[in-house]
Image 1 (cartoon, rainbow, N blue to C red):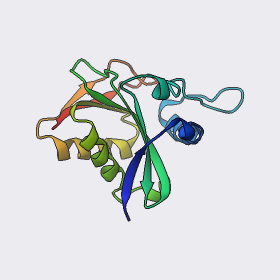
Image 2: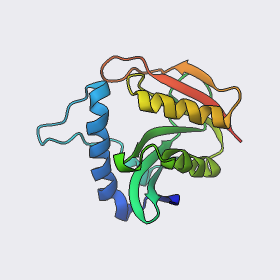
Image 3: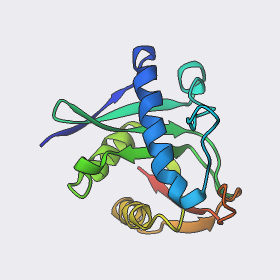
Image 4: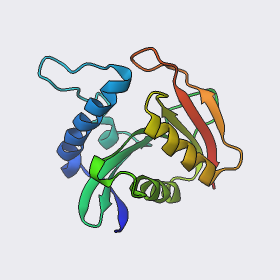
Amino acid sequence: MKTSIKRVGSDGKDTLANLLEKYNYEFSQYDKRQFNNNGLFGYKYLNNYFTEQGRFAYFIFVDDTLAGFALINKYKECDRPVDWSIAEFFVSYNFRRQGVATEAVRHIFNIHKGWWHIKYHKKNVASVVLWNKIAKMYSDDYELCIGDEPFDDGTEASVLFFEVK
């Protein structure tokens, strides 16, 4: 089983939008976000990943099968310096707990060095475990900060801050 990432081009925008719907549906159990009258969550920053500098969208593949996505930007999540931030990260259920997320993050960190902010919702226990494991793998002195903005349900955001060299 080989995990890889591939930068999403404009031809992959519709596929990414479809995956974002699945991601937002899953995440709504934590932050209580609502879909619109068309039954869609939407993602207001989707176009920015194809028009703005400093934003990167990646598909995650296992062998040749699409397994998820990662959205990377430079958005500051807390009062620490930032070079990169994981805006959204999703691995399909059938590829979880197999090291796919960890390997995808390794590929991302090989491309994007510097100070990272990784924001997570504390009710999403799987992401708490994953992101803290990642932080420990890449830094001996990572820090857990309080995010500048709470989630839609008012829950305080947890933000891991560390440097990838």
